Amino acid sequence: MPLFQLILVAIVQGITEFLPVSSSGHLILLPNLTGLADQGLVIDVAVHVGTLGAVVLYFWSDVKRAFWGLFKLSDLTDPDARLALGLVVATVPVVIAGLLLKLSGYDQALRSITVVGWSTLVFGIVLYWSDQRGAVTKTAQDWNLKDAVIMGLWQVLALIPGTSRSGITITGARQLGYDRGDAARLAMLMSIPTILASGVLLSFDVLSDMDMGAARDSAIAAAFAFVAALVALHFMMRLLQSVSFTPYVIYRIALGLLLLAIAYT
Image (cartoon, rainbow, N blue to C red):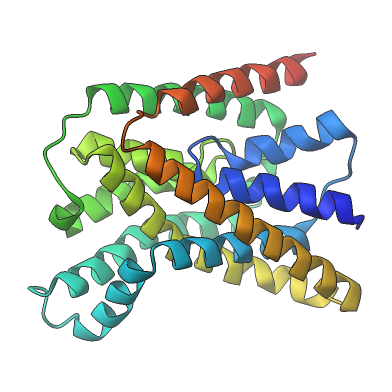
């Protein structure tokens, strides 16, 4: 794959993976605007590995807490154990639903520009409604198993391309009463086991296609996606201290309308 395309796909995926703007919408729009061919499953897995590394590094202190909490699950009075169990519980619904969707074959049927356009638009409006109406009654320390289950069910909607995994989990968190910063933080932590599970599932499909050229391309894509995702995470978390999710919603509406215009013409 040409180096320019590798870098472009990696940067677009890295920036949009954690912003609530739908990475799949951008990756579908990219070939329409540039005429480039689809990057393929191998590069998809590589950029997900890169973004996974970025979110783990950015939230390293929370990741360490959750990891050691796995060894203390017998004592749920421990906050680290509660965090670890919450992340596990929140991941179960999307893993089950994703596996069923893949086995049914409907996962590819949903990857149409029309579906992505409508979900980008509609779930962007839902994010705005939740963000504006959501009261602030909880902090991340209040996260419990009930909220983990509810946010996990919201995350299932991210299997519809264009929904935005981060956007829909932030929507669920705002509905539950978490402030913008903690909603984003919980959504990002939930992304770690989800991306890991998705990467493991997809890796079975790409191992047979790997060769030295593909391995080189994957390493380049992962590296650029890592840097782009780290920068995007830094700026989003900083901006949320003073700015709502409205700018992302406006962008999503514009992107959704553009995708629908392409789809219907």
